[in-house]
Amino acid sequence: MTRPAHPQIRVAAVQAAPVFLDLDATIDKTIGLMEQAAAQGVKLIAFPETWLPGYPWWIWLDSPAWGMQFVQRYHDNSLVIDSPEFDRLREAAKKHRIWLSTGFSEKAAGSLYIAQALIDDQGRTVQTRRKLKPTHVERTVFGEGDGADLAVCETPIGNIGSLCCWEHLQPLSKYALYAQNEQIHCAAWPSFSLYRGAAYALGPEVNNAASQIYAAEGQCFVLAPCAIVSQPMSDLLCTDPGKQQMLRVGGGYARIYGPDGSPLGSNLSEDQEGLVVADIDLGMISLAKAAADPSGHYSRPDVTRLLLNRTRREAVVFQRPEPERFEQLAPAGDEAAPARQPLAA
Image 1 (cartoon, rainbow, N blue to C red):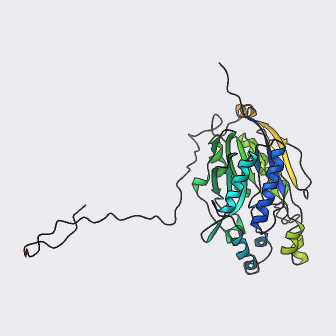
Image 2: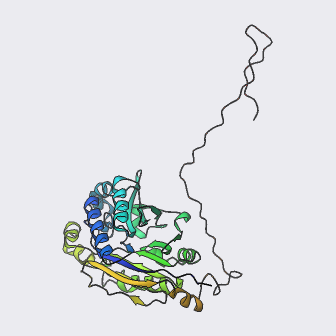
Image 3: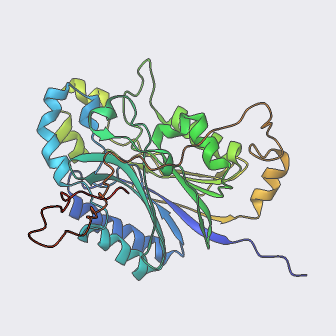
């Protein structure tokens, strides 16, 4: 009996700066990086959190009143699903025969969401999801996702799941994906430039550790793309020396990890744009699972279990009333005719 072959594919995690607050130009840059990856034989490329049109760093630098100067521009350059701009990404995936996982600021009516999209190599949208709980001051910009956004997609190249940034510090959200037999995880991060050296660090040590632990804990491959803060972004946002100290140029720490937590590929310096590329073999997952499968043989559901509500949350549910049915009216002039009344359902 022939055993099924495990997919062996080349993957890439992007480390680059978006063309900040410019959706069309950042899509151009996205397509260029996709082309570059495809030329190297990459089958799946992953981009950072809110790559399109960039992460709203102003929310960490000053008051909400100061940040209002960027709000309209950010809304105008956020991505609408199934828009012509979204179609450009799908067409590029099809043209270059590459799977695309990208983070973006999703605009839906009047609200924004931290979102991710997975597009296959035929240009078809496999999944869009939203970050369940924006972190700290992100809640001044973005709305929330729901349980339907914790889903792993079964694909020809493996079972693929996605989370953003500090969703990797939410144990129950992680466990929800582990339990769906996740094999490849796209961990989207913004730049690790904020508050470097401060008492409460948001830097690469903790954040990359979260990606690495995710790989070892879930026994899956983790692609952890990470953006860069460019000098033009700094010039726009950091209008005084204090802000320049809070948000430094650079901060790119893209990584790829194997299912045992081992680093894969060659890393770039924090201010260098490019791709972290690695060849992965899904057969390695069985070796890691043999030691500890957190939702399988290494679990105790009789002691602890997770309740996952996958119902899509809808703000408004539209219901159409059933048409009223009336009794036959009596002939004209019949004084005994009953009044027109709806029949009971």
